[in-house]
Length: 309
Length: 309
Figure (cartoon, rainbow over the protein chains, first blue to last red):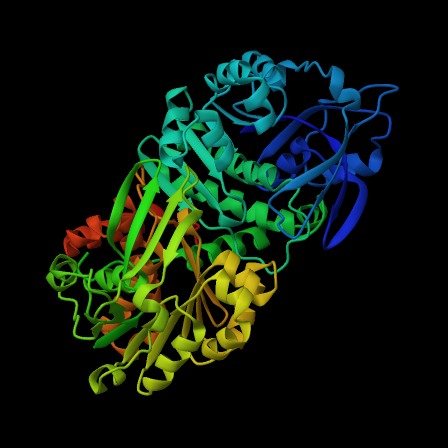
């Protein structure tokens, strides 16, 4: 099944208490597609500049990611982000953002891409997300990520595109902020009323919760002794989730057990992603390691029934 | 099996965005013993003043809690706390604390109480906790709760008493603070090195994690649309946990499946506790409602294995 992601392709300079990297490969579409690549064919849509070279392409193509629709803008510079984290790795502090070629990004999709069955709108301007969503008329399932910047400044555009997607990934503070409701359960319900049948609340080191209609599932994060760089965790989560669902096809979308497996694969991919900087860990990951951690997480959350239940 | 709790018996005035109560029954030993009373006989040790009357005793005795060792100090006033919460119910803001009879509390235990098999040292001064721990020489299993105030100001005394108990309940920020280690997994291990074989990290609305040796279990909180007053959630959790373990007896203490059930009962009791103010909800709770929510929580966290696993 085909899965398309539209989002940023970037160079990231990141400093955490555990180390530092300069201009490493990053961006939401990159983290997403690497995670999804373990389950299905995934195609990246996004712009890069002249500084984006063979080494960067190779990280993607080695994992079988289709890079045909990465748009090379001559004379341009690739999106650049630099930031740092303190010991509390939940908050990123941005030092610098250079939009580069992303500033004028106007997605043009091939017919093949427009007919994708699964679509992920990574965290970009909601008007761009809507534009892509409207091009992909055949998408059976569309997921979307966003952030406080757009909730604050582009609420109307965000509400509009959220009304056209099936699944929203947001962290729980964002869900509360967007719904203007402090209780997460009510806030998720209120987002579902806008259109999406599925809401995933990302909760960082605490895991993630899944709301589907009036059904609820929650999963703790895989317990890690080493977290080096949380950048891209959310996109790796979304990639694991949607990659797995895309591998099953649209008919699995109402299967609660499969949605729970997708949550777990999302969580597993996020856990590997944060163990090292940028794409380092996921780039050399194997499906066997992923499935082993899935089973470990399943054992860690297994609960015996009550006698006679 | 006998379970004894030593802690505060209090009047609480609490204001949250959802309402307000003046001088309602509260205190760590009260919340703990009400929660534990659904599983086993529990005995409360703590001081009260002249203002503590029949109505307050009745809340406890109606649930079968043994109040023989509640020490009535003539001419004294019961411990009083007033505080409030904002929409983020995770943080309590204290307005006023009047120690009253708690200021001179010097626990004297009957021989029956000293021979208790299960003991819970609720959040009081660690030197008092140690005194009680040393009196109860026969305790097969002792749990302890504490707080940032003692971690900051009484670290030495706290380390000493923690070295004598089997289980520590702390919220995750406190575990990190106590262990001086930002990573929760490492922090919990470091607490276990001081003596306790079991560490429970309370994570508020995110649930709780259980560390036993190198084993890990985590459980999300029961998703609630209505949270009126979080006061006493941690003590209700500890009460559900230790009440259930005490009902099984000391031989169950190495049974991982039973420890997970205890976590779940803890979580269930905490979830009922926060749905209304003070002891209101738990005072009229039934074991059937508890078991129904246990099963619901189990369904909400159930994860299918991988094909062929």
